[in-house]
Image (tube, rainbow, N blue to C red; front, side, top):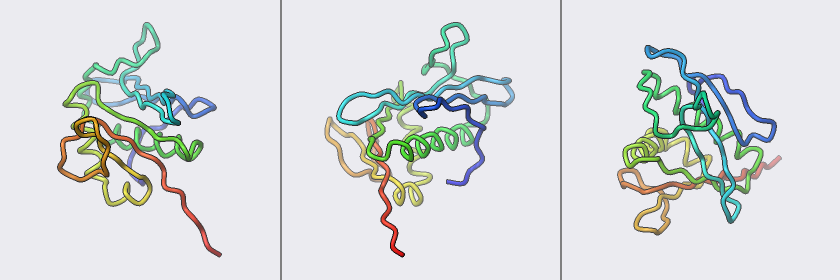
Amino acid sequence: MNLDRYRLKASEDLISFEFISVGPKGRIPKMIQFTPTNYNSHNLSFGNKDPETGRIDDLAISNNGDSDRILATVVATVYAFTDKYPDAWVYAAGSTKARTRLYRMGISKYWEEAKNDFHILGQLNDEWEPFVIGIDYDAFVVKRKLRNFEL
């Protein structure tokens, strides 16, 4: 996706990323981490960087007027992570129902491009199914589609 996004600072292994949100509320440090779970999946965590602990605060509300740019930045990390780890599944669920809804809206907004690059599943009633726009899922998993090139 070629969208306006923030400049990222990435760890060497592309497991964690940091950037600064800039808007009316000032400069707010943000973090994204991919934490291994099981079955070659990684949990995507995102939020403000707590200045005291250096950890992600996924309940903070910034309202800095840059949500589309932040979404594009988070998506860029998913592309980078899955470029390096193409067999990994990335699990994402918001820390609240409202945040999970924002993830769904983001996937829906960029569905035409996302479906070409990723296998995307939504979790509904503890079952995984192919993502469908308009369904209120509890969580999501994505896996990069492998491309076969012919000469």
